[in-house]
Amino acid sequence: MNWWTSTRPLPVFGDSELTVRSAIHSDRCPSSSDEQGSPNDSPCRCLAALYVLQTSIPVCTLKVENDAVLVQTIDSGPFWVEGNVHRRRANEPEKTKQFVPLRRRSLPPDYLKVQIAMGEGSLSLGRRRRPIVGGEICFLRGDKNQTPWRFLGMFFDGVNKVMLIIDAELRYERGLGPTWSQHKQVPLVRDGKSLEPNQLLIPVFPLPDGTENPGWVD
Image 1 (cartoon, rainbow, N blue to C red):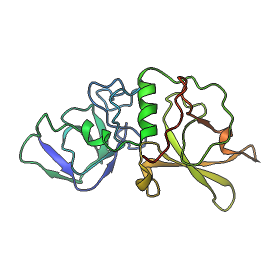
Image 2 (cartoon, one colour; image 1 turned 60 degrees about the horizontal axis):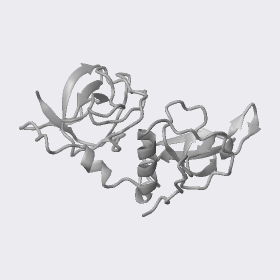
Image 3 (cartoon, rainbow, N blue to C red; image 1 turned 90 degrees about the vertical axis):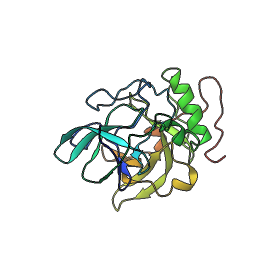
Image 4 (cartoon, rainbow, N blue to C red; image 1 turned 180 degrees about the horizontal axis):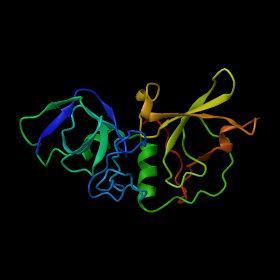
């Protein structure tokens, strides 16, 4: 196989059109993508999902389609990234240099607790309607995949009130500068009526076992 690394950080996708956001999981994780790179809805158990392919992580090419390439790391499932931004490696990476430990050490404590809980099954959170606190982890109502997001705040786009949610795995020092693939802007309006964040978001804490939010910062 030909191994290479990217010349810049690349967002990870689940399709060759580079439109479906995805993540890199261990090849032993139930959330690992299928052979075509399509995301799996099963809860993550590797606790180290990566939404961006960093320049330090070697990958090999499995398939090329137009401007996209299907790749995988030495111990991950396949995923899609943008092509034509790589530099070739001389040697195959060592099996001991896995991507999982690279990520686990930098996870925020509250996100780690949520990932552990999700690894034990889907979280049953009921119809929580309390106000969302800035910086806390939440789910978008109606999201069957239960993707953890972090509520950062609200702003006006000139017409509507909009809330900003970011990738929940980002630490505090990186939270104010997420990449485009790590944040989502959600208009707080429905049928012409203004909404509040708690009408679209479900706060995760306390967890069903009573675990309280340990906070975004150590």
